[in-house]
Length: 225
Image (cartoon, rainbow, N blue to C red; front, side, top):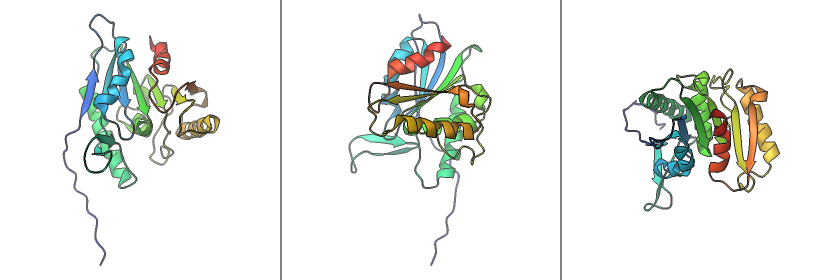
């Protein structure tokens, strides 16, 4: 006997964290940061204290899937999705992130809006940029930090044409990336396949492993100052 699958849309409570720059520091804009697999945004956001002190408001949403990192107790982490019901999860992600952006829209029309994804968060960030309500043109900068550009953007009818540049950040000792040149070529192919201009993607390497590098992030954000 074969079971029949059903779907039931529900309302759920989504979480996000924010940190504002000192009042004495002129605002540079809003930096949205999407965490990696197994991380929690309330801790992940602390990796961007340098950017906060430099004048950026940082907003860190949480992936919908929370789980125990080991066994059935102890530390908890979150992820954005798995391969199961992935299209439903992508749709739910976009609805949450679009609503979050409306909720957190800056009051100053001159404020910059930059989107950063780290590790697993890179795929979610690029899908949001390509498929979100605001459109790719609503972003001033995109940062793919130690992650993979999703190869399904074109299949999902995502559009990266006419948007800002993409800065790809990779650590020299990242255990998940063996060949930096090959990884960048793969990223470049996924970027251009979804309409991104081949001359608007940059590779930045830093000394370090699979972790946020505040100095490298700061260098990229420096051009918005």
